[in-house]
View (cartoon, rainbow, N blue to C red):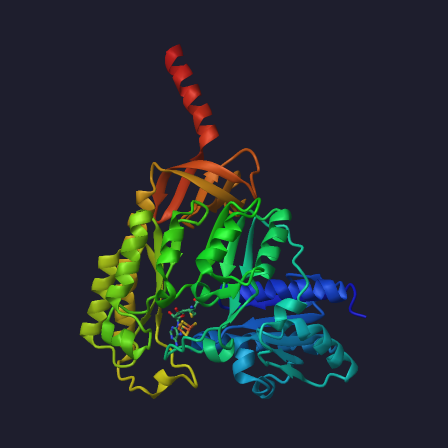
Length: 459
Ligand code: SAH
Ligand code: F3S
């Protein structure tokens, strides 16, 4: 009945949502042989995969559903489904704000969608809601991915049990649940056979990962990285996101593994110990510094990024200054920074938030300026270095130009006559303009140098 119909997915938020949307794609193609379109106006099923991490992200959901309403008036058979964290948090309340919605599902119930879709069709469009957390059953019921991509995400754990005072994730995605070790290894092997060269291990707190292998031995995140790096065809491993309190010596030592990429995203939120304590981050700024010092001993040029929250309730000038000093001390080479957004049901909403929006914006701007300077300095330090790039795509703006990522996760642009998409190439970084990195293919460079020498001889 749904065969040959088309679906459209719009994804908001983090990489976990991107991953879930890919899985949604697999489920629909596998169960219904439906086709994905990037034109919502021609779709028979519209999916919105939502994010509720900050208020702005949440508001985007209702604006988008408003825009989709007109498609439904043109096509009454159109189905609209809302998934992700807003779906979990708001549940069937979404229906009262957006009555055009037919299905509401959570991040852990993607695999139940085929049944929900069939039910909504057969039960004459009665609203279907399932935002429960059925442990990790999702992975047992999802079809294995058939996608051929040079870089592939693999979810290793779901949810978060850290309960930082400002964050909705433990309430929307549930507590930390680890995926079975053998299943992860199996999925990585399959992806590698399909051509994946880079594996991105994904979870809210990947370094909290613990499980057992087939011998019933305990395995932790560092073990998982090591096992994955031994799988044929896997040449580079990334991971996101980690929490400082689970960053043990075994994981730090794993940075000696050349397959582990040369970047680390380690959210810290604040450089002030009093704020870290109020946020219940369970570590101090010194403990964070100690992790970084040890990692930089192994990887002196690691690209180190973080997340910061500005204007946490009661943040004083002094506490903000501590964060600024911390940023300078550590020399983060990039960061995401956000103004604190009170999220319903989180403990931080009970704290007194008496800082004006003007002050918060001023602080954010100051912080972003310093981060930008550090980011540019890092990019410039790449000048003259040789980098191995996994080529992602052609440039949309410049003919004959391609781009890909270096091991440190920086995008590098380069010209090439040949199409190397999906392959590793060696590039020498030749210029950095406003934090945009350009390089030259080493082989082409050798050719050019030969040519120059010849023409000099000719002179
Ligand atoms: N470990 C997680 C963190 C998830 S949230 C991960 O996978 O990245 C991502 C970032 O959003 C957090 O690190 C934090 O900086 C920011 N954030 C979370 N809740 C917020 C809030 N209430 N207001 C502003 N920023 C928030
Ligand atoms: Fe959120 Fe803290 Fe977990 S930021 S995702 S509760 S580690």
